[in-house]
Length: 154
Image 1 (cartoon, helix red, strand yellow):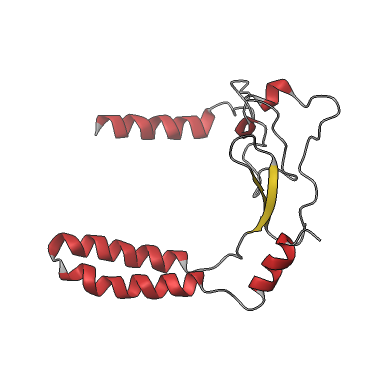
Image 2: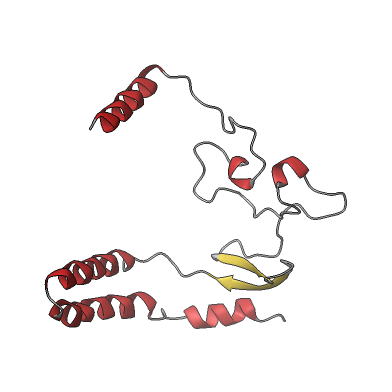
């Protein structure tokens, strides 16, 4: 209790009269320190290309790209790279936001908490988990066509 109390006192005191920390107080070299504080919704306006272990310190070598090009601005795309040498491999379309992860998480929580008390909870609570997962992962109208159009190299 004393530790929680001290943490709360410190948080309140710092919020009231503490000095605001800069965006990168430790001079970090990785990308999480290159964003604004607090970070924007997507962190970066364009996806940066990383050329080493500490991209903020190393910068961009001459003649090398500093950001990913060729991704659609109107779709939720991400660049997929090869595993070993991180060369661009293809583009993947992210699904649109949906409310279904929350009911799936609640149903999964009910399943695991119920399984503590009776093994039958696994059987009966699997049904709402399966239903929420089906609704979550079921392809939306036109979604498959958009994915194929994005992945087609022509």
